[in-house]
Length: 330
Image 1 (cartoon, rainbow, N blue to C red):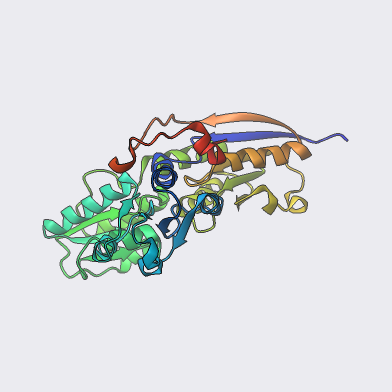
Image 2 (cartoon, rainbow, N blue to C red; image 1 turned 120 degrees about the horizontal axis):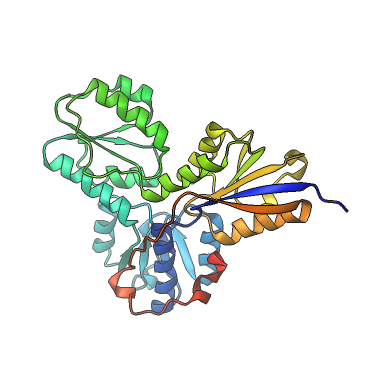
């Protein structure tokens, strides 16, 4: 059967960032060092394939620490890459639990920026999405009443602070760069003394993936972003692809979710992956298109990433092999 031609523009960078890679490694290494079960509070990252893969290795995911049974109190509990409020490690300590914090170092940087604003007498404006674990964690670093959440330009236009001359802002790390710029511009217009963080809060990986999508999307009949529906950075990539010129854009967790009848006739396909999406799923989706199209892959690379974050000290002498991570990295 003759397969129709298809050009696949494969974005780079894509997929795991250093913070996600580190968080998954922490759970894998904890299982090697301490044995199963290792408990994880909330999803370690927003990806069902990753969560199910770690469950198969012996991880148990819980929503709150009181779900850990008494007989397993000596087993480690890992806090997710998104960060947690200060109350969570305090709760763990009160329960005599041994915990490993897998918070992304770039999220921890935002925590420190917010606390610095507050320490210097500024009311903190957090730009982010209500209910996202990272936002909950960042707001939980500060005393009640010292931080306000702003989500949109409209929120920024309506915001009424108690003291307009003593404000500082930080942002969630996984936002749309362009959308966030609009919110900051509106806040700066209204509050000229607004203090920016000492460094950009949106992380390098979010920015790099969005830039690669902007580069690849123009002229694409379809743009697929590999990622989970609760992944903020993945959903932003779908939006960025549409704004940059893709005719359609879809968020897909696995190849099995693709409705091939809906795909129709396409000649150019863009593919990227959110920062918590494994490379093996990108490969799976490319293979699914190759089964149906005479596909050639073109790389759309806009940056090289060499960042590496060390795991917790307790785990640094445990050997991590290529085989240990092959289930996500291929």
